[in-house]
Image 1 (cartoon, rainbow, N blue to C red):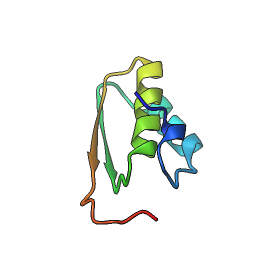
Image 2: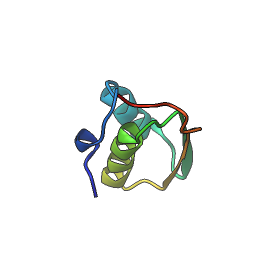
Image 3: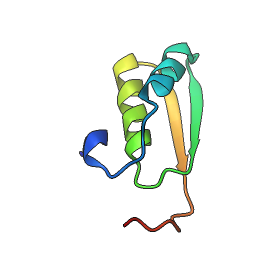
Image 4: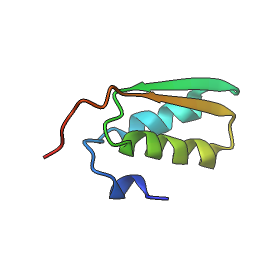
Length: 68
């Protein structure tokens, strides 16, 4: 499994995701719109796993963006 740092990304808001997981009730559902290559949702998944909380994550993207 790739770490979020090994995935091409524009992810620069780890603190926001960490706070969201910390404040989330359990169970909870998170939805990320616009996942591009998935680095941010990979980070989110890591934080959820570390928390031990029951949080489902849905990542949604139309995959029409092109990376250079």
